[in-house]
Amino acid sequence: MRFKDKVAVVTGGAQGIGQAIAKTLAQGGANVVVADLQVEKAEATAKEIIAITGMQAIAVQVDVADNASAKAMIDRAIAEFGRIDILVNNAGTTRDNLIMRMKEADWDLVLNVNLKGAFNCSKAAIRSMMKQRYGRIINITSVSGLAGQAGQTNYSSSKAGLIGFTKALAKEVGSRNITVNAIAPGFIETVLTDDLPQELKDMALQMTPVGRFGKPQDVANAVVFLASDEVSFITGQVLSVDGGMVMQ
Image 1: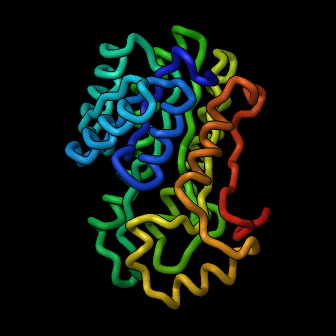
Image 2: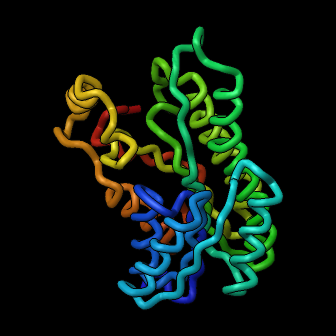
C-alpha cells in the first residue's frame, strides 16, 4: 500500500474536502488523525474510516488559530502513533464582504484560521519530521489566492499568503527530505458551496473550461499525488485543481 506505516494529520478533516482527503489517505494505508473544531463530526469521520478501510483513525479537537491547541493536536498524534509523516493544512473559513463593509474581526478571523493556522500546525509538526528526516506538508490554498476575488479581500489575502508560506517553508526544510506543496482548488461541490446563489454558480461554471464543478475527491486525489514518495522531487509548487478556471 502506498502509505503503509505512514501517519497523516488532516485539519478540517470532519467534512467536505478534508473528510475526502482523510478517507483517501487511509485507503492508501495511512493511519489518520482527523482534526477539527467540530469534534463530534470528526469522531464520526474517524469511525467511518476505521469501518471502511481497517486503518487506525482518531479524532482530535483543534482550533488551528490557537498555537497551544495546534501543538496539542500534533503531540496527541505522535503520542498515539509514534510519528507524523503527512500534514494536510486544510482547515479554513470565510467571512465574505466588500472591504467597505468588512469588519476588522472578520479580517482577523480569516487570516488567523487560514494562514496563521497553517503556521501553527506546521511549526508543531516540523520538529518531528526533521528528526526522522521525512515529511510531506500539503497546504490547501485556493484559486482566490492566485487570482483574487471581489468580496474576499480577507480570504484571498490569506490564501495568497499561504502560497508564499509554502514556498518559503519548502526552501527551509528541503534538505531534510521534507517537501512542502500547495493545492489550489477551484469551485468544489461541498455543503458550503451548496448555499451560494445560483447566478454565482452559473458564472463559476462558465469560467471552468472542463464544464463541471469539482468534487472533494478531485482534491483528495491531488493530495495523494503530492504526499506519495514517487514525487519526492516536487516541492514549493502550487497545483491548481480547478478544471482550468485559473491558468498561469
